[in-house]
Image (cartoon, rainbow, N blue to C red; front, side, top):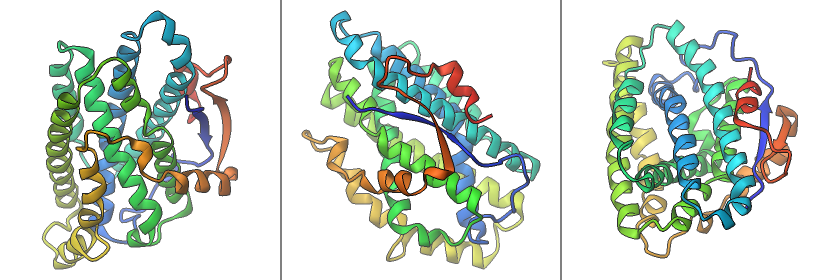
Length: 289
């Protein structure tokens, strides 16, 4: 089992942020803002899915999983809190989050299904966040300069997504999740992630007043489809998920661990999920306060 450390990020997200905080670029800023808007409701869904999945484990295996699950919940609860604070800044700028209510409605539809459905959806989404984290580590220069506290937020989040990238996947397998259900949910999550990210990005650009500027779409096309663009570079790691023998550990997670080791001054350690005295979810909600 992985030892997942719960960290308190030492940044102030109550101070105002620049409108185009991501390298001064409207498109990159709008897209990352869109992703951030989806995180609190998404993280809450992941927590509930993993809790429900853990309840399916045989009693004899629950102690074995307890530490990793506790650490996963603590990390995700902290992400939820941090991005909630960040999203408050976006709302103050006049941006409107229309993704969250649509996501909440979709999640409500999954509730009556067997818990492995929600767990498969979580594993698929966690794969998305892990490969995007990999892109961020290797091509962060493509985002342009951003102020230190926001760079710390995104790199910290990416590091922990990489760190716990196997938890939901392993739990899904441990409770008897099938390959067919796993790939079906990846197809569904891919559609949702692509369409909802684009939809919220367009909304953000419209409210920002930069939707119809040539520079916006020139830079956006380069960021998404250029030589070092997200789409061509993420296609292969995304496709790996469809292999019957795929496991998240097949993708390199060392850049995230290296960032955490090199930037230990950016956060404080609250607890380690694999220890008996692991931090509870309620405590984890407070670490970003």
